Length: 149
Length: 339
Length: 118
Image (cartoon, rainbow over all chains, first blue to last red; front, side, top):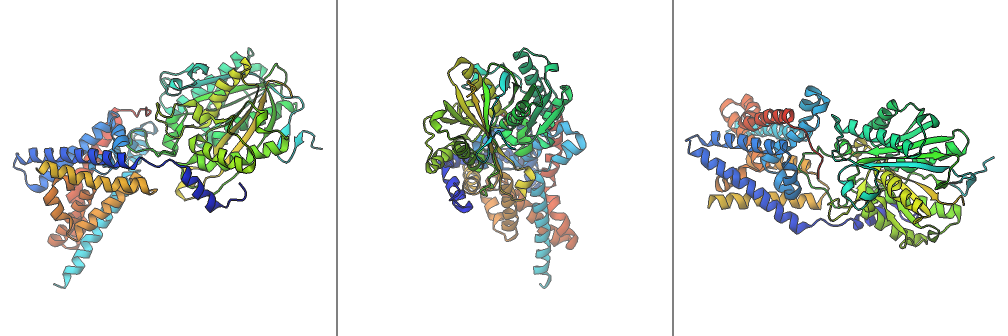
C-alpha cells in the first residue's frame, strides 16, 4: 500500500469502478428525451389551433411543460423518470422545472422563506445566472458589432 | 507506563469488556434485505411519524438505545456514559438523542466509522475502570444523509455504479466490565489515509486504503493471521472497496479471500434492491454488527470476528472546494472467549 | 412527420448530454448550465434558429432552446431599444418559463412532501 503514490492509487481505484451501461443509458436518454420533445410538439400544435402567434405559442408551451415537470416532481414520479432517462429527463425544460421543485419540496421543513424560497434555486440558480448573464452579453455584443453599420 | 498496548497501534485488554446487550432498528428497505431476520425492529414508515427525517433519525437512535438497555435486562441507572455519533452536521441526531437520555455523553464524529470508534472508546472507558457499563450507539438515515451530501430526494438524477446507499437505522451496544461475552479483546484505532480521491461517488475507493492500513497493522501488532478469524468484515466499502482490499491485502501478504466481506455488501441484495455498490452510512456496520454478527456469535456460528468500520471524513464544503476525501478505519476484535 | 423530427432531434440532443454525463465527472447541474450557455451562443451566431424552424419542439424543449430564446430576445431587444433592450430582452422572452417554474415550484412544495427513494 505504501509503495503506491497518490496518482497510481487514483488510477488503480478508477479501474475498479464498474463502467456505466453506456448503450442502455444512451438509448434510454434518447427515448425519454425524445418523448418529452414529442409531447412538447403535440402541445405546440394544439396551441397553434388557437391562432396564437409563434412567440406566444413558444412561451405557452414552455409554461405547460414546466407545469407538467413540476407536477410530476410533486407527486414523486419525476425522480424515477430521471433515474431511467438520465440526461433525457434533465435536459428538457421539464428537467429544469424538476431542478427547482425538488429542492423547494425538500427544504419545506426549514421554513417558507429560508427553506422553500431560498433553496428553490440551488440547482436552477446557476442556470439562470449564466443564461440571463450571457444573454445580456450577447445583446451588448450585438450592439457593438452593428454600431458601425 | 503503557501496559495494555501491543505493537504500534493496538490495545489488548487484559480484562476484556463484555457485550451484554445490543439492538438494531432498520428502515423498510433494509428490512427487505438478506439480513431481515436479524434485526430487532423493522420500520414500515421511515419517518416513524416524525415531521422531518432528522427527527426520525434521532428517534430511531433513541429507541435503539432504550431497546439495547432492555435487551441487556438492565436499567438506564446502571449505565454511566453514552458514546455516540452520526453523519449529520454537528452530529445533531446523537445530541438530540442524548437530550432524551439522561447520561453523560461523549459525541463522536467518525462518519461511517462511528460504530467501531464508539466501541473502542467505550471499551477503554470500561476496561480502564472509569465505568461499569456504557452504551455505544450510532445512526444514519438515507433521506437525511442524501439531502446533506447529495441531491434532493425528488431530483431526477442517475446514481453512479460506484455509489452506495445510506442505510436507514441505528444500532446500540451495551458494554459491561462483567458479563458472559462476547468480549471486546483488541482494538486497533486507525490513522487517516488519503490517496487523493475526490469523487464522492467512490467512497469505497476513498476509504479502502485506511481499511488496508488498519487491518495489516492489526495483524502485525497482534501476530494473528486472517485464518485466526471466523469473519473479517469492513463497514461500508461496498463492492468497489472490497475488490481493492482483497487485491491490495494480497500484495501485503495477507490472503483474505476465505473469510472477508463487507457490511455494505451483506445488508442489501445489490441486484434485487438496486443499491449499486452496496450500503453505507454509520448504521451500515452498526446494524450488521448489532443484528447479524452479535446474534451469530451468541449462536456460536461465529466465534472471533474482526470488525473494521470505515469512514469518509469529508464534508459537502470540502467537496465543493475540490479537497480529497480523508479515509479512516478502526478495527475491533469481538471474541466469544476472553483470549 | 414533424412529430418524428421533434422526437429524433430532441432525443439526439439528450444523447449528447448522456454521453457527457457517463464519460466525464459532470453532474446534471453542470450539463444544464453548459447546454444553456451553448444554446445562448448558438442562438447568438444564428445557428439555432434554422434548427428550431426545422425541428420545432425537438429544438425548443431541450434547455438549449431556452438559451436560444434568451439570446434571441436579447438581440431583438437590442435592435429595438438599444442598450436597455439588451438588458431587458433575454429575460422578457424567457419570462414565462421562469415565472411558471417559480410559481408551480412553490405550489408543489406547499402541497407535497418528498419521499425516500425506493
